[in-house]
Length: 320
Image 1: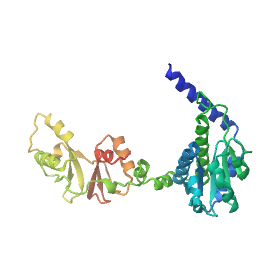
Image 2: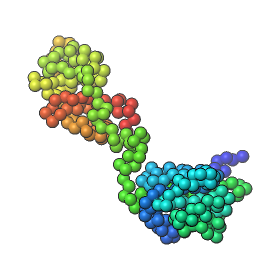
Image 3: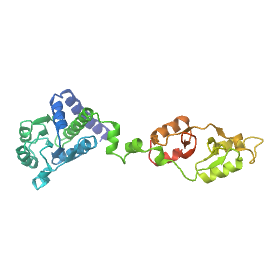
Image 4: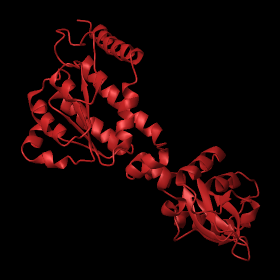
């Protein structure tokens, strides 16, 4: 059996379904977006079975992209949770056939309170379609299932239409990357947009030596500091130079090398540093990568050393 061919056929069928839907989008979507934008409460998504699973994902997407939303299972609604739907809410109900018994049972109660109802179904003449104020049609020519029975193309299209609706709402609200990060403070994007240099830089036990120190002093400082570099300051305690373990290795190649040599004989003068501890750690990482260095020194405006930021620290913290 050629599984690769089966995979290709499945993807092609579902891709064709999405392409056909894209060609037939009408003004229903615009009306749906306007209804949700005017909503003063929450967008409540409901469905049963596969439609319920898709609905739960939709609700999570809406909630994380600026539209207050949650998923309500019709069975739970029938047993007390119907009270979770408020008069200022909007309901998005999903049923491919439009005749799901559990979902159909709660529709009269939703309409009794004159709550806006958006239906997603293949059949506008179904029970769901008749109760809905607006119907987003989910129409497929063929399920990817070889028996044309199991929800495959239809669930893919339903999910994609939900994503499209969420994207429309994001654009309508001018939802920005920083807004998204606010809903995901623990995720990679949250770290990228909220973690400052001050949050991750090493501030204590810094390997600082004087510019009058010897190479031996620098090696001891590098070993004790564990950041691979000694920070060299002038007579006013201002950042003056750096001596890295790489500088030490290059110094060893000199014919006249001595551990008693002044550190400035081999140190890097005027090293790269930043004077803003509130810089985003992700921006600092870009600077580190551009300059092909491993350590960035953080100072105040007067060049007093406040801390150091090592590339390994950023990687360990998940900054990218």
